Image: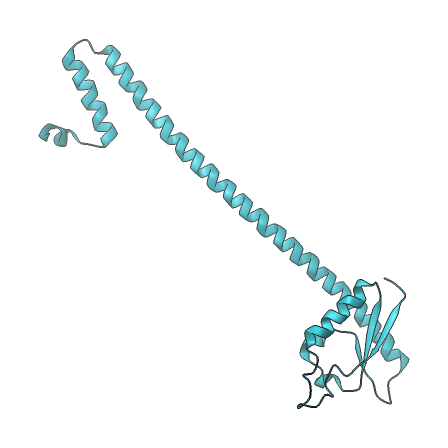
Length: 171
């Protein structure tokens, strides 16, 4: 972190009259803070209003209520809060990156598992068909008469279509 410190004196737009322009939105101050940090500087905001009046979204910013009792120690404490805030934001961003990568990896693994299940299912079907064809081929090669060939074909046909002996007899 740089030794450059920006001391911003602001009221976060709280002092603007309601009939005048809209006060600056908290997002604008958060963006300002990020821009200063991007330049490797630390920033402390001196605000003439007490913290309970500050927008809640700005609670994590290093700000000091500026009044007659404000001391340099208050600014030092704000700088320490800024350092902790930056560490927290960095850790949050790293955790979010990790979560996003983990989500991608999880989806990839789920897709790979799905493809593997499909492949296994296709292989089981192919193996069953191959086995039935082998049994049919063996039965046909062992048949010595036309009646024996018909019997082998009917027996294997029942297995393929899932028919029972009674339903084949009715046909």
